[in-house]
Image 1: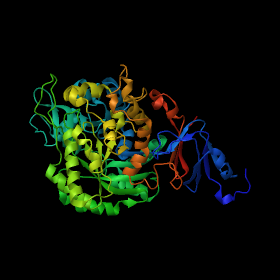
Image 2: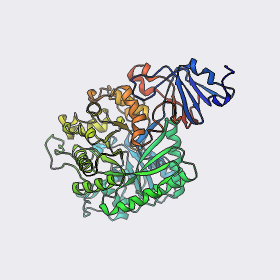
Image 3: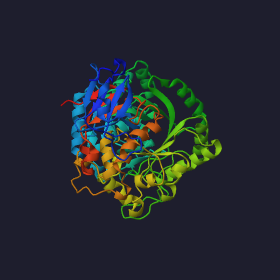
Amino acid sequence: MASHVPSETHADLLFRGGRTFTADGGAQPVEAAVAVRAGRITAVAPEAELRPLVGPATEVVDLDGGLLAPAFQDAHVHPTVAGVQMLRCDLSAHRSADACLAAIAAYAEAEPEAEWILGGGWSMDVFPDGIPTRHQLDAVVPDRPVLLTNRDGHGAWVNSRALHLAGLDRHTADPADGRIEREPDGAPIGVLQEGAMELVARLVPVATPEQARAGLLAAQEHLFSLGITAWQDAMIGAFPGNPDNFSVYLDAAGDGSLRARVVGALWWDRERGVEQIPELVERRLRGCVGRFRATTVKIMQDGIAENFTAGMLEPYLDACGCATGNRGLTFIDTEVLREAVTRLDALGFQLHFHALGDRAVREVLDALQSARAANGPGDNRHHLAHLQVVHPDDLKRFAEVDAAANIQALWAAHEPQMDELTIPYLGPERAALQYPFGDLARAGARLVAGSDWGVSSPDPLWGIHTAVNRAVPVQAPNAAADRRPRRPFYPEQALTLAQAFTAYTAGSAWANHLDRETGTVEPGKAADLVVLDRDPFAGPPEEIGDTTVRMTFLDGSPVYAATR
């Protein structure tokens, strides 16, 4: 090794033996090695040029033909909730009603002292019409109350004991922001949609701070194993069965156990109005500790399509294909929404919206347009998540109001919940407007990416695979029960591999206000990097999802290494 190179310039790390996807605008990875010193990238250049930087203490990481890329960032995820669910009755891996019930029975037997049986992750598509019943739960847990949220978090499955404790019967009215699914005589069948969940959830014992912290740290390790070193938690607040995760994050950030870079989206209480803004300002002041920054406000404007609560411009159809009187829900009155968005934008908050139906998307874009007219352009970096149905007239408006499209790519695929519970009730013309990633990119929208875990897998490589192929990889959970040919889901909306990778790296770094530090591989940036076991750019698109993470680095230090 060249002895004339001063030791203080030797690299701490040198990545060699593969290509690097820099995420700085290129369509292909580059033939380059990468040097790191003191947690920062110092050089990206041909390997021969960097050999003099290798000293006695330099760790050389052989990519072995794999790919080096910026570490992934998840712009919409729920790690505290998902982590606690991992430690409770987790149904996310089960693909039949019988398997779910067997898992519930086994969990209840293993936890004889538990006052409630809590957990979630069940998929609507494994039950007829997406509706499990209290009677099924009663057969396996007759003596204790049960509440299990479905995989999207917008519905809960409860047993008769839970309904009795909550005082729910055929005479209980639906709340304004939800629905009690009912038997023919009006009695609750055992599924509570949206705001109706709270009728039972208010009785649920909250996880202890210790349990919530354990969930967060378990989630952090899982995300590290998938190459994710930064995220935006889309739900900072207190929720059924979970304590206020604001305090959980502050404690973990304060003692250094939170190692990831995290932006917290403070929950907007849809039962209140703009009078809550001073409380959000105060939370933001207290909420910047260590690597946690509570600088965002999360506003949920509608529900989901599968239970007909996503806000639509035109009515849902019934099973016969006829229009119903239901256009879904608007959780926040549009005038209140405009005022709140304008005030929060003026105060420098980033706004993170749940907008799934085309009416909700339009309502949010209208509010952002009003805020821009009142406050002028800024750098708050607002983004709309989910975007299942976007009216073509609204595609160009994302760029006009400088709002990012926050995509959950793993959902853009044919699978039972889509084919059986969604498309028939949207109709073919409107169904073709779903998850228009390609049209959004062509209209100039900035794409950022998230998983919505625990709703769906947080694996970015599975999301990237689906964004490119418009079909889930064969090993994804929602592929296991679907043995039909994997026909692409509106393939004209596919992204290129570079576009998808960039959304999960530089795009989400922009949304997280971390783009000056992370998101690309270039000198001066923090060495938040992921080593993949292969170069997905070099193989066929249908094999992208086979790619796995070998190593994850945060500030140049390994936080995950796969066992071989």
